[in-house]
Length: 167
Length: 159
Image (cartoon, rainbow over all chains, first blue to last red; front, side, top):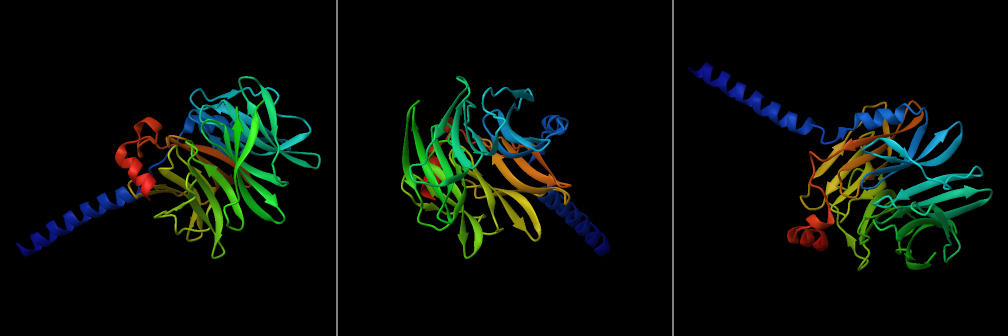
């Protein structure tokens, strides 16, 4: 009788342990294999991701050249960005607004590092000048694409500057 | 093409890096040196206050923060032991979610979708950069502007 009690107790202890361990080990994040496999098949390497409501923007590297690429996550298709990539420039940071209408990016061209806004519907580029001299490094956008936070190098230190675009 | 206005420069801390705005534009996450350790800091841009983070006061060094729409979720690359991992703190429930990758894939940067439904993770594998997307919809409540309840507002604003 007593040994049965211990067997029952061990059984329920094991069940409890399995439930607890199962809960701890369950991964809350499910890989999106279809999209991830599509990226791998392009034979490019990707870095600096920025995710919008249904967009992924990243820097794609192929044969030593970096360029900005945008994907529709649902269809897994690349979205054209006419005029954003230049043969003489290297992008180093990119961010997309929630609706995918605007991209902010930092790029190096010859000895200059510059900050730009790209309006996708118009296909236009606007250079954003920092009000205080500095070298931009990283950029992030809010949902509207009208507020930017920029990491800037000034006199040997990193600052973060908030910029609002009027229009 | 429109004017440019600088609305805030420098937050009084030395070496601020990796800025990330919430989609609503009210919050900013950035990496600052805290006792020599790169740590994520969350600020309310409306009043300049630093907002407390329950789980992200550890697992340093932090890098690459990212925020959801109302900054309910704060995602960052952190460290547990000798492994880099992605950590998401839910500021409403106080829970944290961790994504540990296989040892041959080291997470380097991340980006959270505005509603928190997806996470893009840049990893390095065999010397190559890669981006992997993860679906979070089955595990976390979405952080959308219209779904923001009064209790959520008080938690997010009052923290």
